Length: 156
Image 1 (cartoon, rainbow, N blue to C red):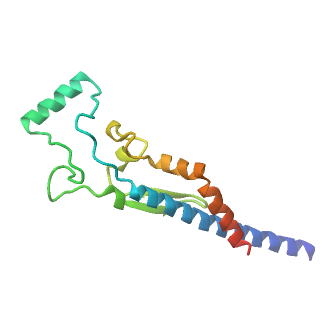
Image 2 (cartoon, one colour):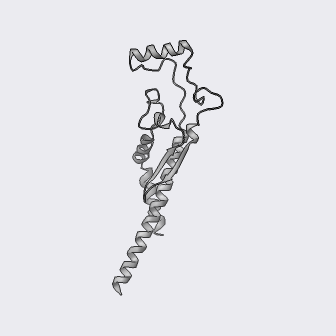
């Protein structure tokens, strides 16, 4: 009889911890998504592009001169009015992964070059990477507070 009661109590505790984990992860992901959505720094200053090489600089300037390349304009996409780029700050989606894991993904095809680990040089220091937003949440204590509140709520 004692073994059955202890096993039931352990199952109950495990379920409560899972519930707390789900609440905490959903809350943290929503806060991170909100922070990413608010990111929209000013456009880069003229002349802020740093060339990787003299060859790259010559190529780009030649393409501009020939009219095959246009000045970047946010939201213009590839320059065709019927194919604008998707707004980055409206493209984030929270995806549930395995137990205890969520991911925030962007449906904008270019997101990895702006807020991802493949961030382009022109965006460094202006746009926060997703990993930087996550680290800020950890460092600020928000994650620990949310986890504590979720555990307290699960065991009321």
